[in-house]
Amino acid sequence: MKALFLVIASVGGLIFADSSAIAQPTQSAQPGPAAAQAGDPNVTAKHAIGEIKTIDPAAKQLVIKTDAGNLVTVTLADSTVFMRLAPGETTLTKAAKIAFTDLGEGDRVWARGKVAEDRKSVPATSLIVMNKADIAKKQEAERAEWKRRGMLGLITAIKPETKEITVSTRTLAGTQAAVVIPVSEKVEMRRYAPDSIKFSDAKPATFEELKVGDQVRALGDRSPDGASFTAEKVVTGSFKSVAGVVTAIDAASGEVKINDLQTKQPLTILIKQDAVLRKFPAAGEGGMMMMGGGGGPARPAPPAGAQPAAQGPGGPGGPRPGGGMNINDLLERLPTIAVADVKVGDTIIVSSTKGADPSRLTAISLISGADTLLNMLAARQPQTSGPSAPNPSAGLGGVQFGIGLP
Image 1 (cartoon, one colour):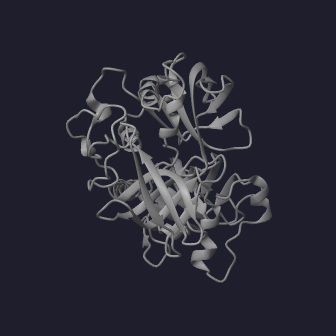
Image 2 (image 1 turned 120 degrees about the vertical axis):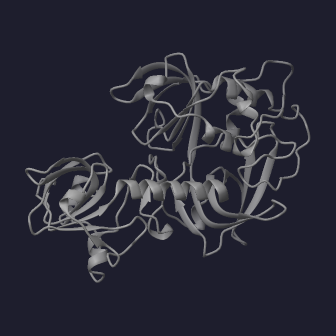
Image 3 (image 1 turned 45 degrees about the vertical axis):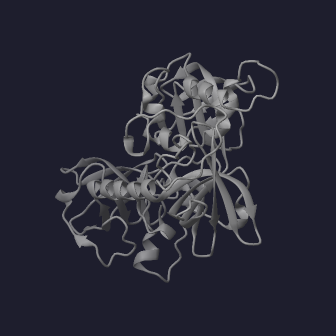
């Protein structure tokens, strides 16, 4: 996360602070009208921000790709100033001078100069660079912290008078664990916008925007008894999770068509580059589903209908004594796959933000081979009408994986 979270590098890309805001604090950081019309906030009249795709040493040119997918040609001159800035820095005071030969594909750059009217090229007077390896190192450190000190769940209650939220998580055994999170003025809050898919897309938010049913990922420390969580950062979003059987795949456009298991209606799933695709193991392929925290040995979960156990001291990602492993933590350990690995006939679960068109979802996360997971969760749902077989989509409420990691 950036800005309030003081992180410049993040999953799916890096967002520099606006050039005028850093170099000239008294000037406005808002892009000009032409940039707004172009619809790409990373290309304004005075700069372009993106990842280096190609380098042409002979012509002294770069082609960069913005987070919106637009290509911009950056022309360099003998007078161009090159500086390297470490991820996480928010001013240029610690930038180090480098040379053109120090640039590499995958580096993030902020090309400052007068951008052409068509927004496709810029002769750079200066180039601020963040090294690809440094970004990756920063990302890994940040992810590790969120895994170690983070928690993920659903808001089940909100107390406006005390500014507290109750967040519940679910285990594979069907038990629930509720944690109270005070949201003081010191807590840095962000929220996913509709149709956004990246952790870095989350915008500054307020307590008043929270709703029961929202997903929450929080960074902080759990109390010794596990009943409360002192948060430093909270990211929320209104997400939709659906399960369905794949009926068609268009790998070129990144579209997957499914029949929703719950509504029986067709849905189109758009899979962009930043979406995370994972595969759940088939039934009988291991105790992976019941692993303890840290990838430890498999251990059996208690039988369906067992009384919920108290929250254990193992931390938000660890095992819950008597309750099995947190579903969210399990899903994040699954191996990643590509769109080509998803086949017609597969059962998938998709998580997305709630957008304008309910018949089209932009995937944040997708899990293939999900029939095993859904059947297992549905079997642990309370049976309200006779001995009929459980509905596979009935257990979907226990799957919360919309909010990714940095």
